Image 1: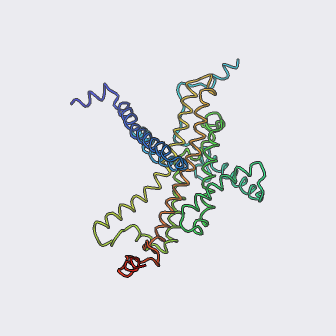
Image 2: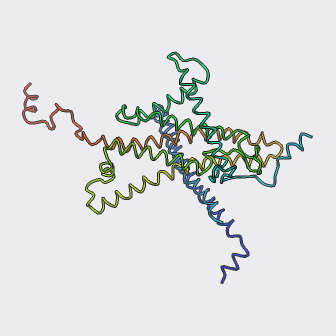
Image 3: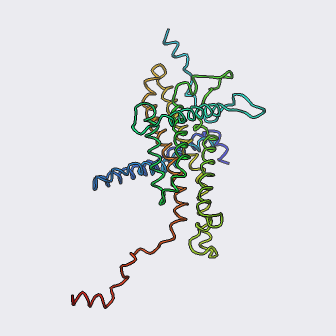
Length: 78
Length: 286
């Protein structure tokens, strides 16, 4: 009984999309920060580890996929 | 007067496109604007690479050949180092180099101003859109890549049965290992989707970001959109590199997996496993 009234007054589509974007980008941001931090720590310990930048960026791209999937689901929710 | 010319392109909101528009049809088959762009890029790539291949000499000269040589060298080292046996890697280098250059050219040419809203066809839709900015395009690239990767891994493993055997650790009759094996196969099938979605979403989101910033600076659009265009150059190159390296790793996992079971003995051949009483007695006396 409350649901139709709420659906008329409040634009639940926009709220849903906003929550998806907001919650969806927290994870990848923290994850990429962790990867970057580990890379810098490893380089600080052993400067020869700087050659692994390419592999660190590969992990960044794998993580970023999940953030972009959250963005893509905007177009699925009406 | 020039201000009104510039604001003539302004609109109510940033114009974003996710799906491609059909431009014309060939025999009842719709040709979209991203297909046209893909054809143009393919022709440019084939002509450029064949022409550069003719000009490659032992001592490096300047010019366009250097860029192509750097890129090809980079991917060749990548592919050859990913495999245990370099001869196997050498066979698949041409495919991955072409894949890298194709995706790179598609992404970079998509940042030109004529690709997108500025240049419109008769029906008012953009005439060119990047081929990798279209989910159909990246799904096509992903499916072709995975067909090559699966075909190559089945051929290197020596048949379909032996290839499927590598998913199962232990005996497949054990229900736990069978379940794990089925899950591994399912993970393999999701690789097509993850590869294509990653490429498509990165390029499309880049275009949306540039469109938003170009709309926000309505007259000063070239200045406000410039930093993000430069960022998109970097992202485009990075995504091409990541697509290629992930495809190479999928192939390397399947191929190295096949060749890695032969030698599980970690010791040298002539070092004894344990020190026997004879050697110990010998070291005490001598």
